[in-house]
Amino acid sequence: MVIVGCLVDTITVLLLVFVGPYGWIYVCVILSVERVGKAIKKPANDTVLSFAGKEEKV
Image (cartoon, rainbow, N blue to C red; front, side, top):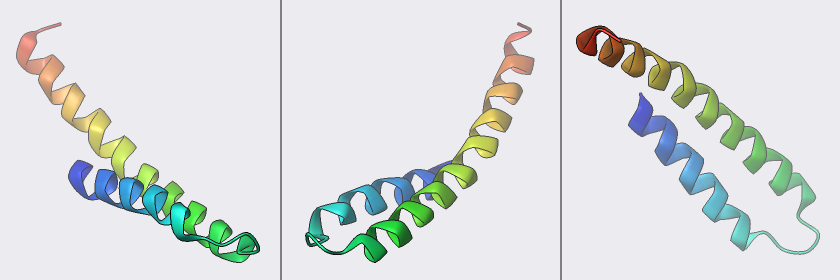
């Protein structure tokens, strides 16, 4: 899930390069998808870190 979230986040940021000067609708859609990618990535990343903390007995 972390990898999927990172891929979605990275691809959407790169897509912003191709938006024209009056493509504000495309920018809104791309930024919404980018936020979904971050929403996928963050909880999965926290879960991975919590399991790593249990292994290290921190």
